Amino acid sequence: MKISMINYKSLWALLFILASWITFTVFQNSAKIWSALNLPIFLHHWNNSIKSLFLKAPLIPLKPLTETELRIKEIIEKLDQQIPPRPFTHMNTITSATHSTATILNPRDTYCRGDQLDILLEMRDHLGHRKQYGGDFLRARMSSPALMAGASGKVTDFNNGTYLVSFTLFWEGQVSLSLLLIHPSEGVSALWSARNQGYDRVIFIGQFVNGTSQVHSECGLILNTNAELCQYLDNRDQEAFYCVRPQHMPCAALTHMHSENKKVSYLSKQEKSLFERSNVGVEIMEKFNTISVSKCNTLKSVDLHESGKLQHQLAVDLDRNINIQWQKHCYPLVGSMTYSVKEMEYLTRAIDRTGGEKNTVIVVSLGQHFRPFPIDVFIRRALNVHKAIKRLLLRSPDTMVIIKTENIREMYNDAERFSDFHGYIQYLIIKDIFQDLNVSIIDAWDITIAYGTNDVHPPQHVVGNQINILLNYIC
Image (cartoon, one colour):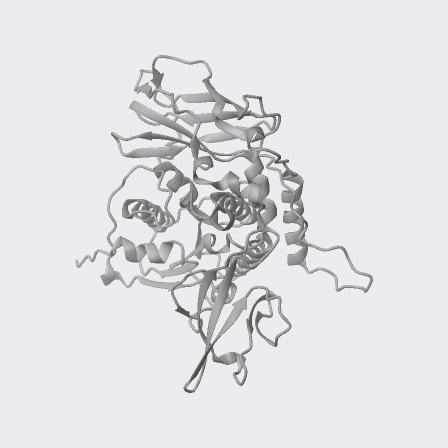
């Protein structure tokens, strides 16, 4: 039997940032493993001053909102209620990792494998005053360098300046704990308000070709111009992309695209100071010693979700007719490299033309490319993909559908556009929207927290871990 190894970097291209959907046709018997998503939107009572994306009705009558528009409105209103504004008047009044305190509840010299370790976190500002509200964006992680293992911790926000941080002690030996203040609540509020104010933080440059003529033109989800526009519209799902139409060029002459970050910000000068490197991802529990964990004699039930545990390498048998197809998720596709738009189509259309059957596996991934844009863009795309998958499972219930969530990325890279706070909101929205479908999940968010990668392109062994989960579902 001939076995071929696939380079992880190639698989990374399939499974990560640009991967929006993958279809596997497997001509062999496979056991099905399904896990239903069941996580309601819960944003730890984050607060902000978001302006509603749905304007008040003008005097002239409007067409009734569609089902999708009503659902978008419902989700945004839910977020709006959970994220009221947090005032930011001075750096001294924001949450300080240095002045905050962490206390182990019911401490012991040695813990047993399977025990839960609870830590009470009390947040204070830079003057040492106790915070009276929650909403800080925190990240909890434990790790065992000796075992090359890691896992995320659970953070519960009591919305009064205190948090409960819980770790399940999965391994024996010395375990290190980490709790980062990614953004104070005031920063979260500023990011959320800024995100929903404009579509122009990233612009797109389209290349039009007509014979020997080649012209570049500005493109985007929304264009603020009186010039004649080319509209690239998906009529069924009402998703559109626009380009300024070049003179003497048909709209169909658009062939290639790339994106550029524009010098646009909706943060005030004072708010920008919240996202300077020294204020992002600050360790709260720097003085914590490692925790000693023993096997003990007591039998405990342990949920072994060792997300960061290294596993075996991947091999694919190409002699068994395994066919992998990959496709970009269509606009907005952020990237400085020029790419062909002729190879792109909206995810829903690709899913709708998939027949599906028991040997077909579809993997969908949405996330990083939507972070620089208002949240309604991401919600609409997720809802449309949900409807397409629902149609697929109605005509072919044996088709396996897997949702791969987005991963964490660099903490210090342009927070207004790409902060993990934006990604976490999208992560929760995906879980909420898809919880009623019989789909499986590759929780890349949890896996990359467990590994502590902080890289938009995680290393090979992290991608390998995700591929192993994929193969577990298929086989």
